Length: 159
Image (cartoon, rainbow, N blue to C red; front, side):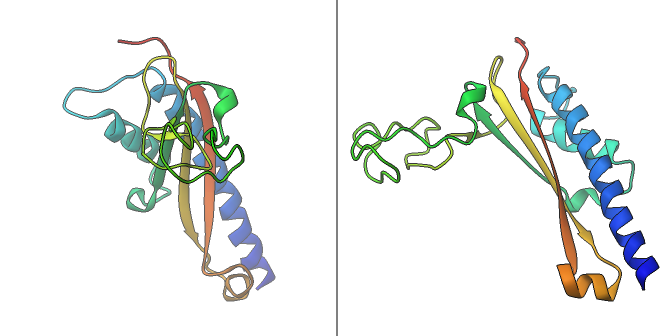
């Protein structure tokens, strides 16, 4: 059982390394704005992550989220409150808060979903639910372990 637990944790670490590499390389592709003919930017990102995981991961279980910011300092920051001056600040956009991401509600993180435009900062988050095979390990940490990788890039000036 100990040996199986070691193998389980080794596979999680290996999956984490593969996912981290795939996420970093895909973010590098995404920041160029490259889109193959007959596909969308979003599909290009999904296809690239799936290709770079080399069949180790089931691409249908991959979760890819992207958030767009105008600069690096905005990452993880709440939308600015106007009245009341402290968060949370529910109410009307433009009256109670500045709606940076344009969704009509105050958010604790001002990032907008999407891949952004030239010069935007994009946070790529890729997650995968790794199935634990050892019963004792799964009793301790659950039947799956979510492996997550993040990459932050500024989009290049593309057309």
